[in-house]
Image (cartoon, rainbow, N blue to C red; front, side, top):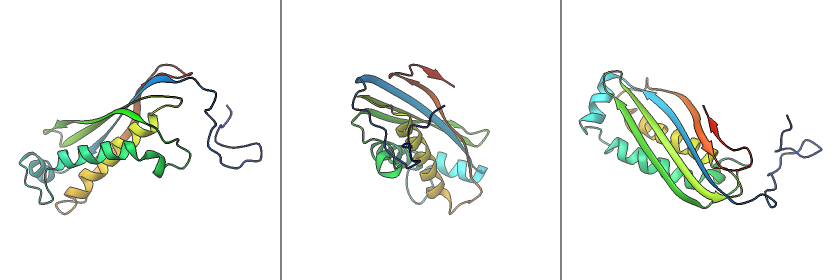
Length: 156
Protein backbone atom coordinates (compact mmCIF):
# COMPACT_ATOMS: atom_id res chain seq x y z
CA UNK A 1 0.00 0.00 0.00
CA UNK A 2 1.31 3.41 -0.96
CA UNK A 3 1.15 6.31 1.51
CA UNK A 4 -0.26 9.27 -0.40
CA UNK A 5 0.76 11.89 2.16
CA UNK A 6 4.47 11.55 1.38
CA UNK A 7 6.35 12.61 -1.75
CA UNK A 8 9.12 10.57 -3.41
CA UNK A 9 11.66 11.95 -0.91
CA UNK A 10 9.59 11.04 2.15
CA UNK A 11 8.43 14.60 2.83
CA UNK A 12 4.91 15.20 4.09
CA UNK A 13 2.52 16.67 1.53
CA UNK A 14 -1.12 17.38 0.98
CA UNK A 15 -2.62 15.03 -1.59
CA UNK A 16 -3.47 16.71 -4.89
CA UNK A 17 -7.19 16.15 -5.52
CA UNK A 18 -7.40 18.43 -8.56
CA UNK A 19 -8.26 15.60 -10.97
CA UNK A 20 -10.80 13.88 -8.72
CA UNK A 21 -14.50 14.03 -9.48
CA UNK A 22 -16.90 15.86 -7.20
CA UNK A 23 -19.16 13.31 -5.51
CA UNK A 24 -21.65 13.32 -2.66
CA UNK A 25 -19.77 12.14 0.42
CA UNK A 26 -21.03 11.12 3.84
CA UNK A 27 -19.11 9.88 6.87
CA UNK A 28 -20.40 8.74 10.25
CA UNK A 29 -18.14 8.28 13.26
CA UNK A 30 -18.85 7.41 16.86
CA UNK A 31 -17.18 7.11 20.22
CA UNK A 32 -18.12 6.58 23.85
CA UNK A 33 -17.38 8.18 27.19
CA UNK A 34 -17.86 6.23 30.42
CA UNK A 35 -18.64 8.34 33.45
CA UNK A 36 -19.37 7.79 37.14
CA UNK A 37 -22.91 7.57 38.49
CA UNK A 38 -22.40 11.05 40.01
CA UNK A 39 -21.48 12.53 36.62
CA UNK A 40 -24.34 10.74 34.85
CA UNK A 41 -26.84 12.01 37.40
CA UNK A 42 -25.49 15.56 37.11
CA UNK A 43 -25.75 15.49 33.30
CA UNK A 44 -29.25 13.97 33.34
CA UNK A 45 -30.45 16.40 36.02
CA UNK A 46 -28.90 19.46 34.35
CA UNK A 47 -26.85 20.08 37.51
CA UNK A 48 -23.44 20.67 35.90
CA UNK A 49 -22.31 24.19 36.77
CA UNK A 50 -20.88 24.88 33.30
CA UNK A 51 -24.29 24.40 31.66
CA UNK A 52 -26.23 21.88 29.59
CA UNK A 53 -23.48 19.37 28.88
CA UNK A 54 -24.94 17.60 25.87
CA UNK A 55 -26.08 20.78 24.14
CA UNK A 56 -22.67 22.40 24.55
CA UNK A 57 -20.93 19.18 23.43
CA UNK A 58 -23.21 18.99 20.40
CA UNK A 59 -22.35 22.53 19.33
CA UNK A 60 -18.63 21.93 19.99
CA UNK A 61 -18.68 18.79 17.84
CA UNK A 62 -20.37 20.57 14.96
CA UNK A 63 -17.94 23.48 15.21
CA UNK A 64 -15.02 21.05 15.19
CA UNK A 65 -16.15 19.42 11.94
CA UNK A 66 -15.89 22.83 10.28
CA UNK A 67 -12.36 23.43 11.61
CA UNK A 68 -10.81 20.01 10.98
CA UNK A 69 -8.35 21.24 8.34
CA UNK A 70 -6.97 23.71 10.90
CA UNK A 71 -6.21 20.86 13.32
CA UNK A 72 -5.13 17.97 11.08
CA UNK A 73 -2.24 19.22 8.93
CA UNK A 74 -2.87 17.35 5.66
CA UNK A 75 -6.68 17.65 5.59
CA UNK A 76 -8.19 19.72 2.82
CA UNK A 77 -10.52 22.54 3.86
CA UNK A 78 -14.02 21.35 2.99
CA UNK A 79 -17.29 23.09 2.43
CA UNK A 80 -19.60 20.93 4.50
CA UNK A 81 -23.22 20.77 3.45
CA UNK A 82 -24.25 19.26 6.79
CA UNK A 83 -22.80 18.26 10.14
CA UNK A 84 -24.77 16.76 13.00
CA UNK A 85 -23.84 15.39 16.42
CA UNK A 86 -26.25 13.22 18.39
CA UNK A 87 -25.98 11.25 21.61
CA UNK A 88 -27.21 7.91 22.88
CA UNK A 89 -27.27 7.98 26.66
CA UNK A 90 -27.22 4.71 28.58
CA UNK A 91 -27.97 5.82 32.14
CA UNK A 92 -27.72 2.31 33.58
CA UNK A 93 -24.24 1.72 32.15
CA UNK A 94 -23.19 5.37 32.77
CA UNK A 95 -22.12 5.72 29.13
CA UNK A 96 -22.74 8.32 26.47
CA UNK A 97 -22.17 7.48 22.83
CA UNK A 98 -21.55 10.43 20.50
CA UNK A 99 -22.35 10.05 16.81
CA UNK A 100 -21.23 12.56 14.20
CA UNK A 101 -22.44 12.65 10.59
CA UNK A 102 -20.62 14.91 8.14
CA UNK A 103 -21.69 15.56 4.55
CA UNK A 104 -20.17 17.36 1.57
CA UNK A 105 -20.19 17.42 -2.19
CA UNK A 106 -16.51 17.48 -2.98
CA UNK A 107 -13.31 15.88 -4.21
CA UNK A 108 -12.22 14.36 -0.89
CA UNK A 109 -13.94 12.55 1.94
CA UNK A 110 -15.33 13.74 5.26
CA UNK A 111 -14.07 10.93 7.48
CA UNK A 112 -11.69 13.18 9.39
CA UNK A 113 -14.42 15.75 9.94
CA UNK A 114 -16.75 13.13 11.44
CA UNK A 115 -13.96 11.74 13.65
CA UNK A 116 -12.95 15.23 14.78
CA UNK A 117 -16.56 16.08 15.57
CA UNK A 118 -17.00 12.97 17.73
CA UNK A 119 -13.69 13.47 19.51
CA UNK A 120 -14.42 17.10 20.29
CA UNK A 121 -17.93 16.33 21.54
CA UNK A 122 -16.54 13.69 23.91
CA UNK A 123 -13.72 15.96 25.06
CA UNK A 124 -16.27 18.68 25.77
CA UNK A 125 -18.26 16.32 27.99
CA UNK A 126 -15.03 15.53 29.83
CA UNK A 127 -14.15 19.21 30.19
CA UNK A 128 -17.56 20.19 31.50
CA UNK A 129 -17.70 17.35 34.04
CA UNK A 130 -14.09 17.03 35.22
CA UNK A 131 -14.79 19.10 38.36
CA UNK A 132 -17.18 16.33 39.46
CA UNK A 133 -14.95 13.36 38.60
CA UNK A 134 -11.82 13.11 36.43
CA UNK A 135 -12.04 9.32 36.02
CA UNK A 136 -14.04 9.46 32.79
CA UNK A 137 -12.81 7.26 29.94
CA UNK A 138 -13.13 8.12 26.26
CA UNK A 139 -12.91 5.04 24.04
CA UNK A 140 -13.79 3.37 20.78
CA UNK A 141 -13.65 6.46 18.57
CA UNK A 142 -13.94 5.07 15.05
CA UNK A 143 -15.38 5.50 11.59
CA UNK A 144 -18.69 3.64 11.34
CA UNK A 145 -19.41 4.19 7.67
CA UNK A 146 -18.63 6.33 4.67
CA UNK A 147 -19.90 6.69 1.14
CA UNK A 148 -18.85 8.51 -1.98
CA UNK A 149 -15.58 8.89 -3.77
CA UNK A 150 -13.34 6.44 -5.58
CA UNK A 151 -13.07 3.97 -2.70
CA UNK A 152 -16.88 3.69 -2.47
CA UNK A 153 -18.76 2.32 0.51
CA UNK A 154 -17.27 1.41 3.90
CA UNK A 155 -19.01 -0.08 6.92
CA UNK A 156 -17.23 -0.99 10.14
